[in-house]
Image 1 (cartoon, rainbow, N blue to C red):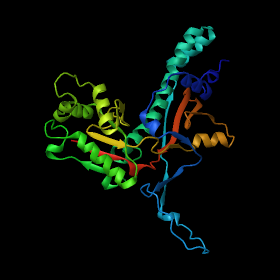
Image 2 (cartoon, one colour; image 1 turned 45 degrees about the vertical axis):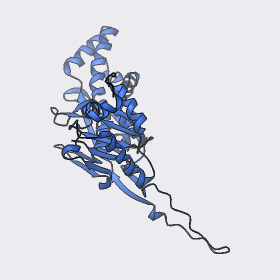
Image 3 (cartoon, one colour; image 1 turned 180 degrees about the horizontal axis):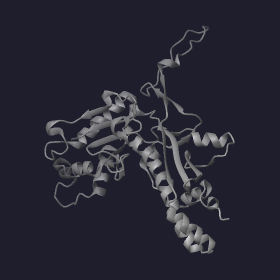
Image 4 (cartoon, rainbow, N blue to C red; image 1 turned 90 degrees about the horizontal axis):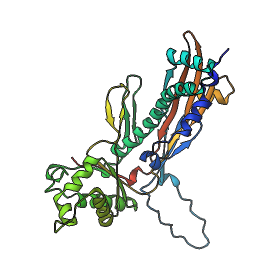
Length: 345
């Protein structure tokens, strides 16, 4: 008797997904993946990253013990749980059985590609959910996910001094009166004065980038004689030379939980500055499915991309295989004090 479970299983899916090129997500480079056991993460924040001077002392006296509580704060958060599943369509199942019976490898692989592709869609959706949370941290300093099943609202404590909303003629869509270069420099100075760290990287959408590109003061500074075309590359070089800031444009969308609403990965009219290096980590905890695997039960589970659990389960009525993708995931943001979020319009 043909057992399609030998083909539709977490190991085969993992092999299929791993062989495909993975989308490079800027958030993953800023909040790299980190696996841990359990559901909670403890986030440690320093006191503005400023050094505390060593206290003077008399000779031949007992040393004073420094209180670390004044330097760091700890906060524990429970990581949210995400899961969704797909089933093999009856037509695909019957075609797969016939292809296997006929020893038609090409036909079999085409059907498997279709079946595995559905699961890859869930895995990519898990990755995008993590990226969505990272981008929310970079754009609002918090996580706010609303769905019919569960709302996830987490405030990471972004200081009021690390954000600004431009008003009236200072807004960047006023291409004549606004001054993006001085704004960026002022925000860099604010972070450096408070933390000792100067932010030298920035993210924004292409629309926001265009406001800088078309600003009359910027264009005159770059091109006083009117002989240079201010391309994206020219502007990025200008900003790097003028301010020491490297700007990355974020593009792309995702479909929200309602399966219909298209949402931008990064919102329009936000300009965020941050320092080099990682800003935190993206923690992956232990899913219930992974816990079953660890305890030796009959779960058929593989872990993909550090923390995404892929589970296959055979059902007898109707006869099918259910493939479930789940993750317990949450970014930390230890360097939240070293960023600046500006609403430019």
